[in-house]
Length: 593
Image 1 (cartoon, rainbow, N blue to C red):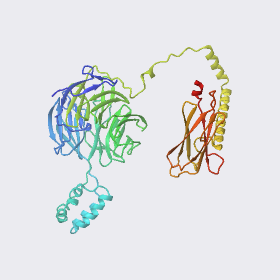
Image 2: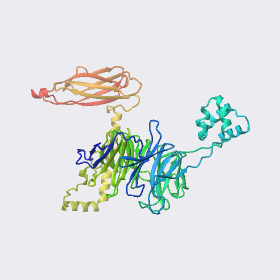
Image 3: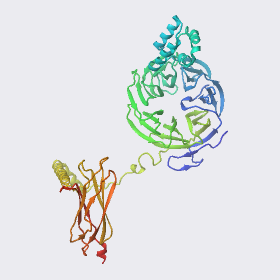
Image 4: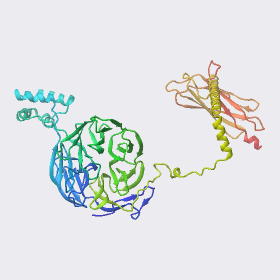
């Protein structure tokens, strides 16, 4: 079912119609029933006929069994059940022999299932982990003597709380049984060996010895046991094993295994660890402020999406380069690589139904979809080189084709420098005066610098003296002592000859009230008359603003103005706590008369 499924935004701030869009709507099926995420999507020429297929590791929601689906165009070509939920899907070349058809690797549970020509070829299982010693002792004692189920429950619970993980058999069944059924369970299984198995959390591919696109690649696995494994592409043996402080969830690799490679692993503890070929442990660590939701490598920059709705760019040594805030939560991320134009960009699927494409922090394009996108994949599909495949939260499938004439242009005023920054300035020609002044500065540069420093020190000295004098004479409107935390400011209202003077007094302490304050106004009695020039301040509660009002009458008929000094004093002390100088305006009423 093909339909117009979304609108396109050109990155310069304007909606564009279908004719101006960079994408062709090839297919939209809201009932495709595909539920997956980006790590479980892969595009490959599985039969070597030049027809690229889409491989989907379907999660099988609603109690359905997980399935491996292969799509050709909009239709499901083959479908097979999986024993566990898929963790990742990847295609890689195992050997140099002709015909050179890629193999399909699907990570599910503790195994990697390898298919060639869509037929099962090999199954790789993770090596088993050593069992818990305490649990091993309990089962050994049960073999030698009649089992004490109550003791096994107690010590088994302690082992699960303070030691490494118990075996799956004990956790999932024994501790959930009734006490009457436990003895029969122990007698039935005490002769079996204890096994503890880890599972695969993420998977990617690493070139073996050549950087060519059709070179042989190794599989790189991340496990629940906080380890990274590199597998041989032919024998499927473990070539290298690396340890991490936490469980890896996203992987990005660059380089070749036999030459030099760099591996970045985003883990559940919110950190990204960088490993190199000669290191068994992380060489660098990038600490994030939130959990990662995606990790993409664009050239030499690691682009990380976080749960704080933002994209971050880092170098491989952990230096942050930039940050871009998203309008909604990031659901999925993937790489957009257009080989014909040498373009690499990051695609982000947001919870508001947008798919945004960024090159570094510059927004290139926005695609609006009818439902939130949960997985993205870009590459050759069928016989089209630049195809974008999206699956939605409701199980829909959207296929778009990038127009051959489409060019992504950095735009949008929200990020990046303004266009005016790239414009050249019209610099005037050098005049004779400018040249003479330059020569003078070269010859007398030391003396000029010394004179400047002398003036600067004198300015600082005068400012410090004036500040000290203001503190000693309480000329500041804010108290400088912690014992009397007060703040005063005055407001003059009116045109004259009568003005209203309002004094705002505030106690800036956090818990201690202030009592016993007086406010006095000093003024030129030949110019002004105040009916009330002395106030007795009530109890000042911390944080409240107390207005004290009085009227000022201008006595001069010549429009002369002066300063009124306002002093705040404590009863029994002559030195003011703080003061304010009120510059009175000229009386406009008298001037008009």
